[in-house]
Length: 454
Image (cartoon, rainbow, N blue to C red):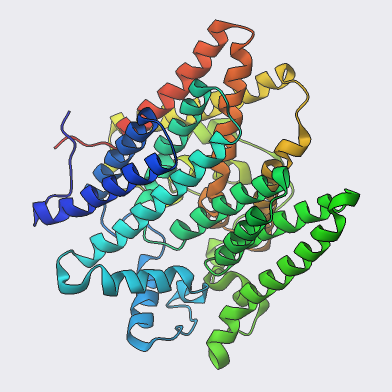
């Protein structure tokens, strides 16, 4: 099969980012001692992402792209943070991603050898690999069986929203990497108690806060784990010191962007914490009662194959979260029109529901878990979901129930699914085959949804 690549107008020049990225992935994964099968799987995922890049411009299926590019341009031209206004909603976000994108634009794209739009998408592609690398490390720390690990890893690499987010020019690209890195190191610190893991976890949390407000969820998880560790007398003194340091660093990371803006800093608390998310026109709000967080409409979930759902009478939080985990919240556009893609979209929705049912069905087969081993992953996931639900309650729009805000949750979900298949397989080879088959169908359907023939 020949994969469609972005070869025009300078085919050889535009292949350079692909070759460099592949080389980086190969070197880095081998340094982390992953086998050749895993390396090949990740490189195959890179080809799918690059195929998607070939027919996706910087503005397509993206979130207020112009605002993010304006932020980068303003930093390059004025060397200070831009003012926050309704015309540049992204300008209220913390500066880390935009500072990195500005340096990337000045250094890597100097001389115009590569179109700037493609260059920024390339940065997102590299950050996407950072997310995959963190996911592989986290999965390896919890999965001993090689087949179970490959299933979970392949689901992360080829999940539909993984492809969508791989080339999206947005601060979510960096926030997702840092959020998952924080979850990984928090888990390591909680299980092993090594100071080095705590320092890495705290650094990841601080950098995540300096990237986007979603970083507060991981900071809350870190502080919550510190509070739980206080119950152990032998850990209490050191944990108190670490907790004090963590609170100080988190506060500093939260206040630094405000201080950097000086007189132009947002005045309202909402704008200081959530930035442009506070600028919402009245017509964008949806229903916000208790039923919106307790119900899930299966029929609507499977019937609506578009990524931008026409707001139903009741916009259910779980419907929006599940749908956006597959297709995002923006319209996918003409590239995904036609009966073939409508059927694939329905198939992906059915497979997601089937995978959730497998996790539920396997629950009675699970032996009592080692709570100390898994509690950081569980509490981190709960923090992400709680912060997202609170975000949607405070400003009820479909964009605020989008899975991209909690994208690190994809890894715990794939971990739970692979472990569920492994547990069922210990009882029945047939059940294991069904579970592996569902995962393989999800991977294949996702690849078929995004790969294009020339």
